[in-house]
Structure formats: structure tokens, C-alpha cells
Image (cartoon, rainbow, N blue to C red):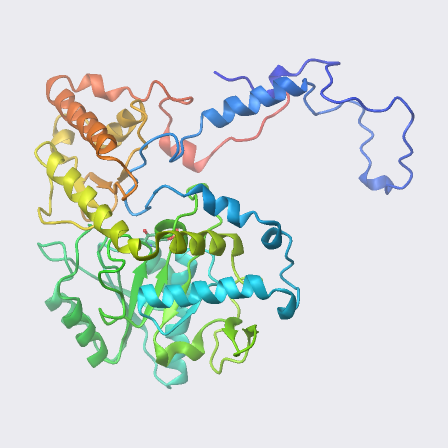
Length: 477
Ligand SMILES: *Cc1c(COP(=O)(O)O)cnc(C)c1O
């Protein structure tokens, strides 16, 4: 167990040399001075400080350390050139309040990124402001609300399938909409009859993701879009995961009116530690004037920030969003070029390869061709006394990040696997054989699977206590 840096502290050890001369502190306001002579800072040499933090960072799991098949999260490789470009002085030293004429490079990059995202999604206008996927959903739902207010219609309902990401109902609910949940059919897709039975003149929007969170493509999407539009409703696309469809189809072709995209999933950028991310929103022509301001535009000579949108929902983020993420996403898009289409083909191929290798060992509730991810069920293993959580913990001891578990909610003991395109076949095979070994162990000796992890810095924790009452602060004894 690593000691805390405070426990390594030894009185009188110095990491730095301060002057022996008395220091004049009179320029500091008295109330800010700490007259407690007993330092609460650890006393430790510079080299030991370095070792301490290196040791801590080695305990982190990250995509550079191992396979990270976290379904719905798209933990793909983030090319390091993106980081290099995002840290160029011209970008990092730019103040967001600088005038347009002094920020032409940054504005041009944002404009070009908007254009690229318009191309990829098929939408007619894009805002880069939202800071995350859920923030994009909120922006989209605010646009839906204002659109109907402006049209003088009072539509209160948003229809969402039971397989949806939890942020969908949350975002719609925050905008004051009633949520109507519809059940998926036996194929794992939207049940058209269920949809028709709740779709009416009170429906403001249907929120969908395609492929859905089971990793399955909604084959009836054009029919759904027709039904929605005939009822006067808008169709919202949760495009957090574009990894499956880039270059093959897009939300516009499927009939969607509004889409958010997670730059920090599909378009690379390290994520998982809480940000920063970016959740740009694209809309069709009729919703252009509702976007948040400012929008980055080109007036024929220079790039400008445009504020005069007739029905704008206003501002939804300080300044213009998380700029460094834009640089990384734009670099990634340029780097890939037309190969963005291949990203999708490999993401889908990898997922289907793994699904077919694993379905003999774990129950596959929807046994159909999947897109970029698939969902297994640990039901059979649970009958042997080993639940999905235990399987996930077991994987950690083999240097794998566990897949997403217990989501989507409609699959019991769900194990949601998304390999992404950036893994080699050897790495996929390694994960497959580990999963098969676990399945065999569950059959032959279930006890042996239960006490993991043992190789991690922290072993088995009380999940509820760790989430509800995390104790993260060092208390000096
Ligand atoms: C990740 C994800 C979101 C939310 O994105 P955040 O950036 O975490 O807010 C929404 N929908 C789906 C399908 C996702 O995978």
C-alpha cells in the first residue's frame, strides 16, 4: 500500500532552499497571513516527491495502459499529435475576450470544425458551445421548447425508448417536458405500435439514438421519422456515438431534426476523468435561428462571432465552449480524412468479431448483427452464484478495464462491450480468451471468481458506501 505523502513527511527535510534572510510580509493583508508556525505541508525531498507522484500515476488505468471496452463510452486511442496541436502557444495564450480580428486563427478553426460536423451529420448549422453530451441534449431540448413556443403550440411530451441513455429523460425533464417511455420490441428496436399509441399533437419530440444502446440499428428509422413529422413533432438524435455510422449514413438522411455529438467520444480526446469534453449540436434549416449565440461565421473576408439570431435560446456556456477539445477534434478529422468511414467499418467489424466469439459462453439476448457495440447478459453466470459485477471485478486483475455493466437497463445482468476501431486483433483475442476463462471458471469453480480484484491498488470496496460517502480528505491525526 502506498503511503500518503504526509506519512512520508519527516520534520526538517527540505525540498527547496528558502532564503535565511527575514522576509517582509507587510505587503500581504494581515487576514490572509497564517501565523500557525506548525506547517501542515509535508516535508519531503524533491526526488521523493517525484517518486511519490509517479507511483500514484502508475496506479491509474488509462487507454495507454490497457484495453478499455467500456460500452457507450468509445474509449478509443487519442492520437498524441492532437495534444501537441492543442498546446500550441497561439491557442493556449489566446484570451476569449480578445477581438475577432485578433482571433482569426481560432475562429477559422471553429468555423472549419462546424463545417466538418455539418458534413458528417448532414445538418445545416452547428453550435460548438455545449460542454458535454448531456449538455448538448439540454441545448437541443431548449431549442425544441422554444421552437414550439414561437409557433404558439403547447406540446408537453417527449417520447423516449426504454433502452435510452439515462441523460435523455433527464435533459428533457429539466426543460419541463413529460417523459413518455416506450418499450422496445423483441428485436431490441422501437416498437412501432407502441410509438403510434402515444404519438399525438402533444408530442414535442422523440429522442432516439441509432444505433441504439443495444448496439442495434433501428431499421424502421425512416418510418419513425415519417410518423414523427406527420404528428408535427421533432426528431432528436443522440449522436454521442457516431463511431458506427460515419461516412455510411447520417442523422439528416435518417430524418432527424436535431443532433448532438460527443467530440470526446467519436472524435478523440481523453475522457473519463470528468472532462473537458464538447457536445456540439447540429440542426436543420428551420431550427437555425434557435441556436445559442454566438455562432462562428464567415462574412466573406473574415471570421466573426455572430450574435443576431432571431429566436436564439441565448448562451449556454461561458465564452464559446471548450476550445482545446475543438482543436483536438479538428486535428483528428483532418488526420483521418476519408478514412473516417473506415473508422466505422473497423469499429463495427471488431464488435461483431467479439460478439460471435463470446456468444457461446454468455447469453446474447439479441442475436443479430451488431454495430459498434453489443450487449451480453450474465444471467447464466448469476445462476451459478457469480453476478456481472463479480465478472467485471475479475477482469480488472487481468489488466482490462471492465465493460459497462447493468446498462442498458432492459438487459438483465448487462455486459456492454465496445471495442472501438483502434485495437489489434491480438488484443481483442486476449480479452476474448479472458472472458472465456472466466465463464469456464464460473462453471467449474464459481468460488474462484468471487474474490477479485486482488492486483489493484484498492481491492474489494463497499460499492454503496464508496459512492455515497467517499472519504477523500487526509485528516491530520
Ligand atoms: C456518453 C453518452 C451521453 C452523455 O454524454 P456526456 O458527455 O457524458 O454528457 C449521452 N448519450 C449516450 C448514448 C452516451 O453514450
